[in-house]
Image 1: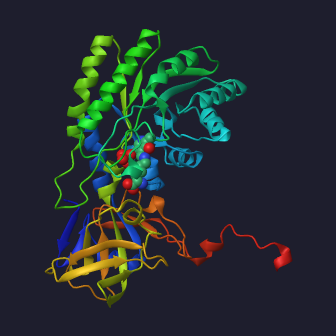
Image 2 (image 1 turned 90 degrees about the horizontal axis):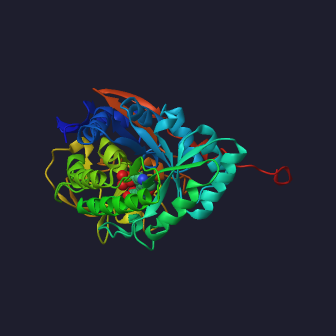
Image 3 (image 1 turned 180 degrees about the vertical axis):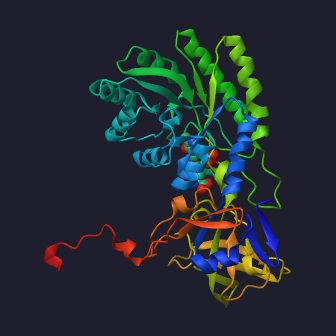
Length: 423
Ligand code: LLP
């Protein structure tokens, strides 16, 4: 990867020495390459010059990162009032924001209405709530219908979202009737369809299948006189976490899989659709590494490396058995020495970041870098076990800037209240 390099035995990211970064900011710390981030969104622009790209804010909610993407012309997929707030603060224009969610609060629907963003409708009941709220606010809302296309994809079951059994979306066979109803409702303007079939998908044929199924539904709605302007195919493009695995498909591969399907069917139906994509992982994952310090090496049944980041900082290995490549940042060109199981400081035996991993010799005080940690890394972190959340820094051309300070221990008390009777 061009933004990750080894110089004199030290791992560098975008021209900055990660060992220096760890020394200056402490560990754990998330380190993001601004150059790579801009390159990743530009790759999407090149592959899909006519589509809108709405960055999935759940993957990374740092407003400097969202702002850089907004500067590059990206919109935002937001899944809560909080994510809408972040996207707006980061400078994403409201015309390029879609409010998603399968269980939105009425207050969230109201916030969507008053901020003038589009809403993706996940159920008939939600449609009724939105219509009532829009009328109360004397506003019109453009909506998309989140469809459950019933497509099975090859990914971890916890992140497959397009199956019939999943909690997301309106069953494909009900979309037509709900849309027909919406066309006559106050305050509501249906303008498109939306789906998201899952995450970390490495076979683009799943996306062409989804596109074909969505175009059939577009056809059904055009048949009843509906207005179809937008087709949102969601996110989900996977990345290559393991260098030994086959390379992941690129945005170009995705474009080649879906655009011909959409173009052909659009022509047949006589519609002009604007395509929307909601990439999260494929925009941010490889921009960021997590640096963590080694507290202890213990030779037991296996050799454990105890680091200062656990599943409180990087939850993916524990939740999804996810693989993140590891580099010993301060000895990055050393020969492989033995196999280690890398564990965090959390009081649970499941707090394992990597099992049986071949690494150069690891010693107390070393810095390990977990690669591809920019998506669902910090954004899924917690304060479990009294652990303040880590800092985030941004690197551009060798210059390093803090974009989130590390919480100090007082953050653990930030919202806690001691009732006077306990004082
Ligand atoms: N759009 C919708 C409606 C979504 O639900 C998601 C992800 C995305 C877009 C972005 O998908 P992406 O391009 O990032 O695959 N925490 C899990 C991933 C959860 C994905 C949830 N939805 C992980 O760390 O693997």
